Amino acid sequence: MRTADIEITDLAAGYPGNPVLSEVTAILPGGRVTALMGPNGSGKSTLLAVLAGILAPTAGSVSRPGGSRPALVVQQQAIPPTLPITAGETVAMGRWAQRGLWRRLTRADRTVVADCLARMDIADLSERRLDTLSGGQRQRVLLARALAQQSDLLLLDEPSIGLDTAAQEAIGAAVREAAAAGITVVHATHDRADVRHADHCVLLRGGRIVAAGEPEAVLSVGRG
Image: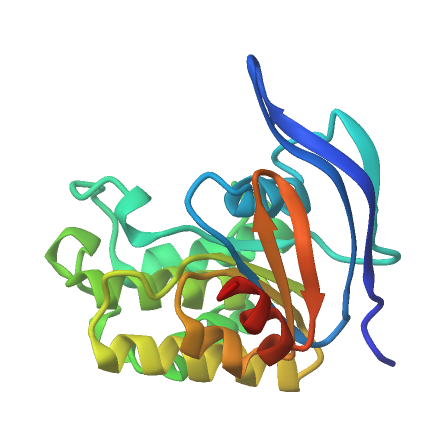
């Protein structure tokens, strides 16, 4: 079955004393890659937070029938550099949504974790602590953790920013593979190449949508 579209209607959201999004209405196609683009402060991260369920709208609604708990990939700079945890333990955290914090992982869970490490080409880093990894390696670990959650909605906040070419290509390939498997992917980006690889694009300015649709068409608006 095709993953359901996400329908956003008259959405407003923000923080105390700082309204960010206003009158946002859009349809994000299910099982496809949607790129969110726009300048800093345009509302991309806020929209991702609403889609992830960690920020409640102040008005409007988000409809996603039958969806599982979203998987969110933050920027690797948001992870404390001294966090005493290995790459493998980090990816295993992706199974907590199904297993619970205090229950042992099953053999099936461990297989999922190993598969996600392999998909991101970081199996050899499983026993390494996060604070010994490069930025690109940490970002791949965070994406592997999200994939281990096996959600039907994958959200990424500028996952390739500041990374080397190899890490960018690995993350881009994983995003396309996820969409090919029927997962809905929504990612914020400043990179026009990322936008061109997407199936759908939403351009935000000042907390409002100014264009949405086929990536090249939206990019032409962005240049205006």
